[in-house]
Image (tube, rainbow, N blue to C red; front, side, top):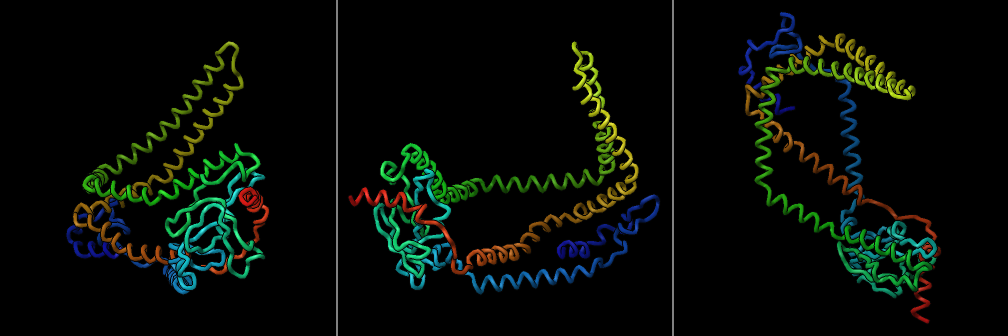
Length: 375
């Protein structure tokens, strides 16, 4: 807004008083360089100030409580950040993904709230002790690891293919099917970095195409402004007539189909009635549309005058093409600030409380595999 006002004030003479638009032979009070203008809806500024105050209040809470390292390194079931502070020697976050032998599904969602910080990613058959006050209460005293895992993004990514469906599941066929789906899902997730890198490389290679597209858009924009300057009213009139004609024609088509249905042997009376009602509805809508257009026609012509007036600015001041990129540059700090605040909000949190029947979900398969391996 400031940029637009700057260009208008700086180049006001380029428009000139001779361009004052006339409506019904008189200067329109809301158009032209000499139009009367002033502040409107000033009480809304109170809401605007309150909104900004709320924004800074939320931002202060986010910066006070947020720890972006939580998003990078991950947090365990106690909301402690792995690889930081007391857990500096445990840089990886391991999730106790399990397999429910009763349902034949891999347990992933519940496991995401039960992670542990580990010094290295465990392998199948490892007994992983659970630390913290909840060990033996809402959490087991140890986890029996069902899958191998490898470190990636400071997490231990599971390799579901190392799970033995013959030992840990009631239905090996169902288990193998779930295994294939789980492996496919995690493969796509683990390759997200590769996808982003490929996307960046594609943009890097095709930069000249993007730049040429921007130039073409600018040229087409000025062409469109020129068309609006000369043809906005004919375009509005033509569009209104075409819409009215389309509605009337649609009614005629339905009525024609209705007649064809009635002339069949035997006549399709019920279907013909549907088309008759559709034709009548189309003609009713046409009449309503015509009435609305007649009622609003003066306002539509005023809107066309406003559009014609607006097109004079960029045509008379070509440097207005700089307004969008400058506006983008002006908005970017606010956008970056919003992103940073969002990251801090996402990275803030307290101790996690949950009540998951881990014994039913995990221990059935874990106990079976453990028994088979230990004899």
